[in-house]
Image (cartoon, rainbow, N blue to C red; front, top):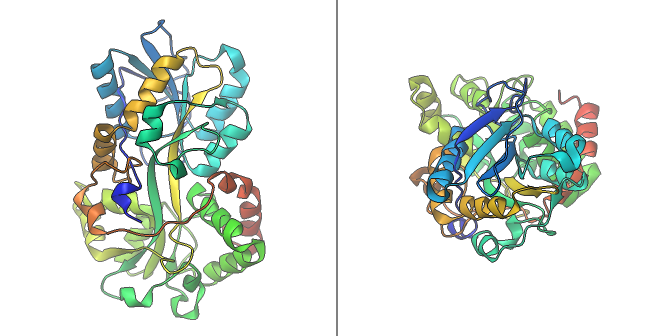
Length: 360
């Protein structure tokens, strides 16, 4: 599968950023400012976003959208689950037009909670492949990131790597690093195994991973990479975009970490590498539907997708969008083929398995 033809661009313009009080992102590093303000609306000239993506790159896209269209973008930032509950509580009175989040499971949860409505647009359908859109058109992919195996260039040969399942083998005993089971990225990874392989094999995998821990899970994906560089472990499960951020950091220590690791896409001969998605959905009670659809069309355009990918090192969803040199250097890879809704369907069972196997 050609990555450049699988993914597409994303950009948005922002004139005003308002954040939900006390809510930080549980998916990304950057935190939103604290504020309980509700976005104001001005007929036909605004669009209001509730977002769990807290990235400067997104803010820049919103700003660009405003400059190109004259439509002001008001943004409320918070944790995904809190924003979903807020949309349910506000009901028809909500001022939110769009809901943005990371993780297919969260998007499925939003859909199940009946806070979204279908989006119809030939432009969007042209920009984003069918497999990166909800089957009922209730959300559209913005960007993706692959959950890969990072490994020490000095201590591991890529010939030793093959699949996620192989990480449970004895050769990786005491050498494997991964973040906590509270990470949505890990929950969705295990949920994908439940869907593809069944609950029994998924539990066996989780048990094998726990047995091979180099240490108890600690920190985020960047911390796993840093632990490889420090010699704490040899391999780690992490997201590709963190590798890009490390490799292009202004911090000399993070650059050293990036130089010490390389990326391996597992399961290329079997089920494919797990890919998670960020998505945007039109809220059920949008007051600025036309503007909201215009924004979705814009953030999935080639121009916007290229800007987002260049700034955040995520894979674009628009197949025509060019990727940064680092992402291009990794080449094409086979991705898991599954309905992103299943990540939400199996989330509860994934958490149960984590608890049963001692994956803290």
